[in-house]
Structures are given as C-alpha cells and as structure tokens.
Length: 230
Image 1 (cartoon, rainbow, N blue to C red):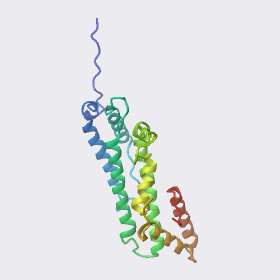
Image 2 (image 1 turned 90 degrees about the vertical axis):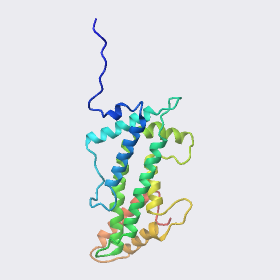
Image 3 (image 1 turned 60 degrees about the horizontal axis):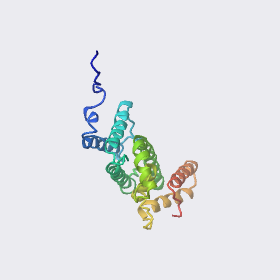
Image 4 (image 1 turned 120 degrees about the vertical axis):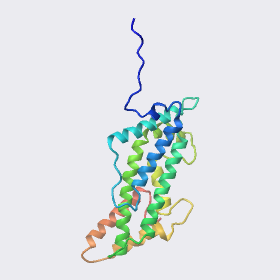
C-alpha cells in the first residue's frame, strides 16, 4: 500500500506567507512595507508624473499576502479581520496627500510662465497620479474591502469607508483642506478656485488650452463631490 502523500510547500510562495496561519504578524509587516513602498515611489516630488506600476509577480505576491492575512486573522465567528491593515492604509494615504499638498501649494513650481496655469497643471498631474494609485491599491485590497470593510459599513461602524471613498475623503481633507467641519482655506480649494477664475478671464493664444485645463479641474472636483462654490 502506497504511503499517503504529504503536500510539500510551494517553492513559489515565500516562507512567511506559508507560515501566515501561525505567524500573521510577519505577513502584516510585509504588507505594510509594500504599501509604504508604493506610496513612497509615487510621492509628489518624484520626477515621474505617472503612478507606479507593479509587475505581475509583485502584484500577485502582495494580493496573496493580503488574502492570507485576512483569512488567518478570522474572528471566532469566522469573520475576516482587517482593522490593523485598514488603519495603516489610511495613515499612508493621509501622509501621501499631505506631501502632495505641500508640493502643490507650498513649493515654488512656477519657474516661468503663468502662476495660475502652473498651479492647475501641477494640481491635475498630481490628481491623475493619485487616481491611478488609488485604483491600484483598491484592486490589491479587494479581499479586505469585500469581507471586512463592507461588513463594518453594514454594521454602521464609524470612520470606515470603501477604499475609493476613503481616498477621496482624504484628498479633500489634506490636499484641498475641505472637510465637513471646516471652512475651506486659501491654501487649498480656495487657491484652485482663484486660479480657475483667472484662467477663465484670460484671452490670447493660450485661451483654448486654458479652458480645457479648467474643464479638467472642474471635472476632477466634481468627482470629489465638490464645486467651486464650496
């Protein structure tokens, strides 16, 4: 009679992922390091205007780690846990957006040309990068969103949002300085609004380009649930 087969560990799966059920802390540390790396690579002061792209192997590795961690930290009732991971993501997004705000509104980006146009160009470059970055992270966090975030929202837990909504909320708060309990500051949505008004009133050879830029800014604000009257 043949001896029973014992499945050997998959050599393609890192050891710490194989050990996630008994040592989820190591897997969480790996996930945190990857989230930090993604946002650090995309920071506003980097020359690349595009959001970072993950190769297939890295993407699968991070996605698998998140799935393994959420599964390994189930509650006694069988519900997936995700509080630690969610709060870490929230912190990283907030830190990233804080850096974006400094880059757009504090750093002198107007080497030459029109300050209003430059401000809106920089704003749109950073907003588009952030939108792609948010989409990447949302896809990586599908398991967390499906099995933990949605349950928390259904149970009316406070300060938990879908990942897309979380990103938009933090961008409004940190970059545009807009929240439900504060009046918009000059350095944020107010400054964007002033730049839009200035370009709308311009005439000359760049008028068509300026109006297209303004249209894109207004569209981006609308996607955040904002208008220039806010």
